[in-house]
Picture (cartoon, one colour):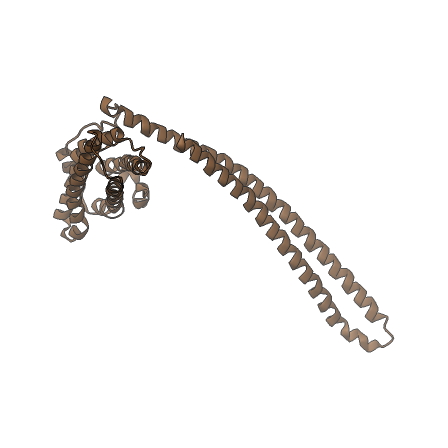
Length: 312
């Protein structure tokens, strides 16, 4: 999902209304929920879908986003429409989208309850339903983050934001708030485990990245030394060849031969330059290979490590 910070990067943090700050934070929370939904949809293909966990997810989506988050957004959108009627094309679709999302969440809950009651569930239909659901949810949040939230910040006044805040229903998030409700405890533990996995990923990637960077710098340093050596050798070679040509022409029996000296110098320098370019090209090619190979090996190892961690 998009980083919500990036869409408002030109807006000083102190100028962002608290309502928008809260909505953006909640979008991050919802993205983590959607990721678990996608995972369980994949597990369904192997008959390993955790429907009890899906039930907790769907119940959370109904009890908090649909009950508190979306109504708060609707107040922002409705005020924006009042202040800026030209924003209707962007805003009305989001207001209607909240209603669609609520219906789709209840539809998903029906399928999950069907499975928990022991009735057969079409796995392909379940996967398709979850895929459409998470895709539309992410697109909805992306539109809010990228288009409508910045527009609202630009158009609404401090008084507008104060009135929106006072009119919005407030309640603690039962999953991501300071206290996790008992019925969401298992879902919270799953999310905490995922957060720990992400932390480990970054930690391992950072270690491998630092090591690869150090090796890469060492390789480039060695390449630079070798290039310096080639330049020095070829410069010295040109000097010696040109000195030999000068002696040859200066001691020639025919004094007219001295006029051929510039051509001799050009050929000497060109030959040394050609050899130097080829040697430098080989050095750079080898350096590139020396940098790529360890990096590719490490990335393969990292992917394997993370894949094992994920499976566990």
